[in-house]
Length: 476
Image (cartoon, rainbow, N blue to C red; front, side):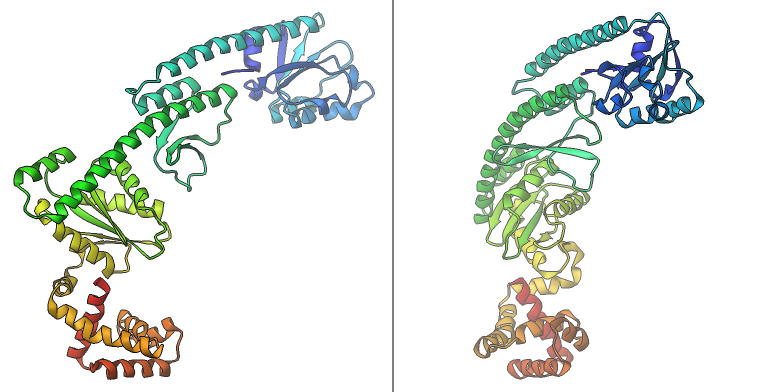
């Protein structure tokens, strides 16, 4: 709401009487909040900004320096406009003053001899008073509009639309802020948890009315989102119970499975399992992952938590899932330090829910990439098939078990050396560099591994078994 008058408004309403605008036309949108009389040469330094200066020039008699710098000083102190009453003391308005007025956008207005200060000042404050009175009326109407929005049934979009209309600035809502957008102001909506942000242009200077509208809107949005968050939390806990029921029993009737799909509001029974595996630090809360997905997917999903992370079961198109997971990484783990995400094959129904969980969990362990879809790892299928077999576990115990036992007994580093050597495609140079050890030290360790396991890195068949043991061990 306005608490000022533009110079253009003042001229159009003849507040200065019969006058001429002789320079500074690019400053007609300057905002005036006060009007003052200048009759001391250094009086400009006292101004606070947004003043209209009235002067007859008496202050500049024998003060040529102050007169020459008059416009520049006015600009420095954010003067809105200058009105000069001619025919008394000011003298000639030379081209330098006119040029400065144009350069700095300070409207230069010439008043007639007969103009009286009291009338000009009276006109100005009467005009400003009317504006402020209208402001109060409009504010009252605006607050009433906001009060009428205080209903459980009102949509978030309606609140934002009404506030935007009232303050004249686009106001939006987002669940997560974007730190890369410095031109956007994010205002958090907080209870015990962060419920998101309302955002607007950061370059806009808000007046008191706009701030009050935003504060009240925050209160409305907070109440609404808190109720929705509580509702979603209750639903998510029910979905977690259903997930456990499905995982623990494979013999549910088709009618029960159909009812689960119906209550999730899915278009079909197809789903992906996504496993969010975290390292031991567990820096990211499972609840933050779940809340992000609830906001981005705009649909219900099943989920369960585990010691090393969380799994969700969602009905979503593959490309949308990829984009959503990429956004989640960007928001919650931008440095790729904590999360490894594995995605199962697309499953046709919940009878395959345990298989999907197994696939997603395994693929989350097998690759260094942050997001892994199992269908992109066809070459690793043989490893997945071996993991749950007796032979696969026997290979791991026979090779990995022996290496770890030796490390434990002799305080050595053979197992990290073995893993690094396999991961670096048996490159001795790269392995030594990664481990910061001498080539001879590496040679000794590899020879010791061959001695302990009775498998040789130079034999292709035995090398294949050594590699499989490492890959299977990573998954187990």
